Image (tube, rainbow, N blue to C red; front, top):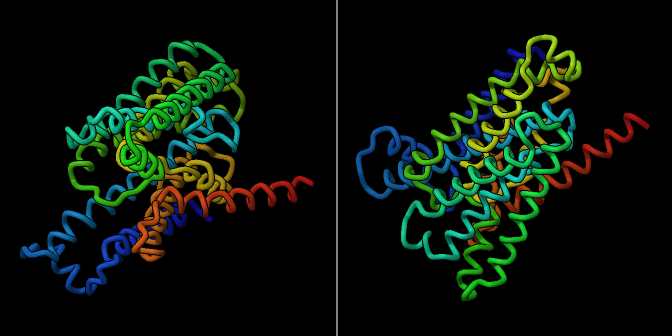
Length: 329
């Protein structure tokens, strides 16, 4: 498939799922009336539902999916490992720890934006620590090991906070947030997270040429004028901004950055640069589809987005592993 045809197909898929995210919900609102309320904004409860509940949720669904898919493709291209994903450098776990601390200390209850701001602070702190441990000129292995150590430490502290939670209600709130969801998000969350995501997208997109050159090896990439230190800092900074912001507003959502690049890699060839934008669109489509599904599956039980992604993503990833094994057997 040509890059133009793939971009058109993925773009149409994202547009269709974005529309479905606006029109599908447990309230069962008529599509025509919903569109009219969204466009005209004549006031009333229908306009409130469309403009203040469904529209920001759809925007965040597309943005979160694009961030996770793009970061996953960039990480796999840089590490030249199809098993890499954004969480390998500890940013997701650190952002989750910041949010959990905000809930535990009461900051999330006292301040409306306390939770996402704490999550962003956790992601920023992890990048600073990662840079300190790995060093500006450290090897790829050092970066991976430092990221795994930071992620393990953040996960351990999160478990400790959950264990020391003062009451079961706080523990329940922490657990439910960690499951991941886009419910009850507003334009306040969009305004907070989207600038960080866009900055992260720009930084990750700037790594395309360097990732293509890395397919020839680090020595060849340097001979082509790629500064590996700058490439790594741009990659880590972009991943922190995009994934940290996504985790701040949506909680922990896994498998998008791991599975989506696998599904699309065969369609773009051996060019990591092309896989970046394809994975961004694919990630947006995957999260939007999952968010529509959670509204239709057990709507009265509030099925969490992260739970559904794990239930779908894990078997899909196992299938990809099995297919790869058969191809190389």
